Image (cartoon, rainbow, N blue to C red; front, side):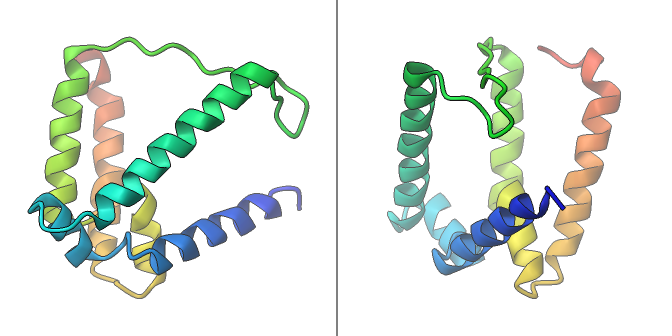
Length: 136
């Protein structure tokens, strides 16, 4: 029962994705063709919101709902980030979907996206299996 709040927040997030047209394949293609500012505005707003959130968490030592401290580990940049980013961007451009909107697309009735969702799950599984052999 305590996880209902996460279900409600996830549903609200999905509604926001649908209403802001972030799940639209056409909007995503416009972005990759540099024909529209819409997606860049949404992504830029999300980056700024995230930056402000991290700043506030660190400045005011904000804790989780259960009282635990929020720990944001430092990330090390490696050449694997470049390869992963290129692979992610290529998949996003081809399918018109990234992990968050995938579920909203399926929930909106775009059943063909189930193939993309299953492919993303399979790719995550494969990464977990070969992670140690990849450049990090």
